[in-house]
Image (tube, rainbow, N blue to C red; front, side):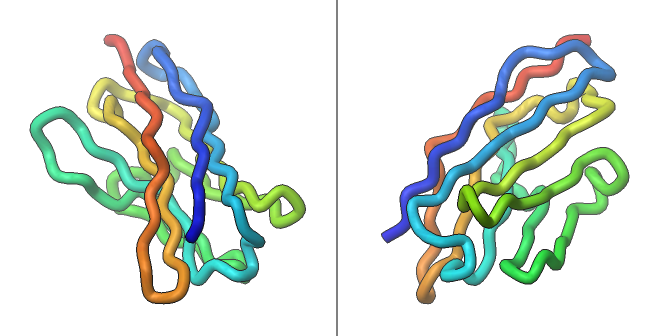
Length: 115
């Protein structure tokens, strides 16, 4: 079992920035993959970015150059730095972990971008 606790969402203006955090209940090095997904109103949940324990990252094309995923292994925490926000980034952002053939999700954190 893995518990994921997210924080850092909020309301920002277009062009603003946010940093989301996700703390895992187990060592980051025991997890196969961590990352972020998002779900906008009326849309399916979509991949945003992932990171491996070794630090390899992967991004959705729509966020490349604006979003940066990173991790602090001493805190078992993954971060998502979001810059140059647009209203199209408005969504609930979910932290994700893949551990021992199972997927785990955080409770989600709302990001709302005003125009």
